[in-house]
Picture (cartoon, each protein chain N blue to C red):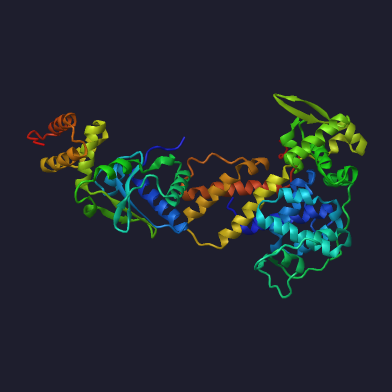
Amino acid sequence: MPDSQLTPERIDELLKALGEQLMAVGARVELVVIGGTALVALGLIKRSTADVDVVALMESGTLAGADPLPELLAEASRRVAADFDLLESWLNAEPSTDLLRLGLPEGFEARLIATRYGPALRVHFASRLDQIHLKLYAMVDRGLGKHEQDIRALAATSAELLQAARWARTLVPSEPFRVELIEVLRYLGVSDASI
Amino acid sequence: MPLSRHALDERVSIFLWHQWGMLGVSSTESTGTTRDRNVIDPEALLLFTLLIAPREPRLFGEVLDWLRVNGRLMSVSRLRNLTRGDRERRLVGAALAWAGMHNPRLQLWAARSPTAGDPEPLSEIYVQQPDPAFAAWGFLWPTTTPSNKSGEVDPSRREALAFRLRLLFGVGARAEIFRFLLTTSSRERTTSEIAHAAGFGRRNVADALEELVDAGAIDAGPRGRARTYGLDRERWAGFLGIETGELPPHADWRRSLRALGRVVVWFDEDDSVERSPYLRASDARQLVEDLTDDLAAAGVTVPHTSDAHGADYWEVFERVVNELADRLTAPHHGSSPFDQ
């Protein structure tokens, strides 16, 4: 049974391995990563995560869709999965489909924090502020749980949460979503939520 | 035990010299090997040798000489059926052409002359005068003259049963059907199993099996929804003048030697690249995954490796390769570990 949890120690090892596999086939890839992996990689939280969420590829300085993963990257990812007994979906490009289409927070690209994993792989991690945006949206969209834990670990300020909430409204302008968003904000301690 | 590339090469070399020595190749090698007991598969052994032996020019030359002397008992169709890919086919073509050029009885083998591009060196040895047979098939190999040291196969040797059956039934599917049914431990084999062991096309083998059933030479019965075949080993052993217990056991040489060949070639390629321990182990894992069925046919069980992450897989790979080499070359007593 493949291991479904990536510990903080393993994430670094896996991305280095992915970089080596890409190097071996002469590919160069830049990933844009959000979610638990990005939080762990930037040292903002310390917990296991189920996969590496790829929101986009960076191609010539521009964000591009990552789903489906390019063939060389997919093959390298499959190799790493076999080498470390992971689910084949450990490198998960599903978030790419919706978020890129709906629109990432303004200034997202400029705030990315890049790390190299060998000459063939560069990973751009979403910044703390952007993670607050994404986590707040996830709390409303998918419920509390790990998203609440993460957003509390990030010690988001009221101003940051309000900024994130305004962005979330651009993704889902419906009234029921606004009501739910306000409830979540109150739950997080933001009472004067005029969004 | 850590894996030594040199030790593996040495064991393969001893194995080959001994196998060929039993078939009449001039050899000073007398070390017993596991497969002494098993019936030899001539085409699988020749194909494996052609792929591996260029690193050992003396063996390569002696095997070519053996082919020149014993070629009439080899099946060209079967050899081609066992090959995979253009390179293997050309290598077989070159060896046959060489034998054809040096034995008038086999001259038809030299008749085909494909067009080839830049010749590929078969080994690192310096080639002053390329051999025309190999050059015609796209390989650079020094001109090789017959050593004239090879003898004819002694068909009375138990390991050479395949040749005795070819002398009896002719070179073709029937001899291979009998080789398998006489030496396999099961008396109920399906057409697919027999066709694989015979190394001929399924239709060809199926037709031959039914004719042999009609002739009363073998028996047919059902296994599930499949039709199975077997024979009365005592009766046939008696006909051949062999004690039933003296019949050499079957080995799936096709798969066993293919696995060994891939491993040896993998090490050649591994020597030519510099890479991290992780990438090396990853590539080794891929190789073992690709060879799982062939390794199983050689009696090697690939261990479950969920704990051997990344570079740690190398130790598993070492164990697998050592076991494969042990299966093929270590002294062995008792029943054959290869027959399934």
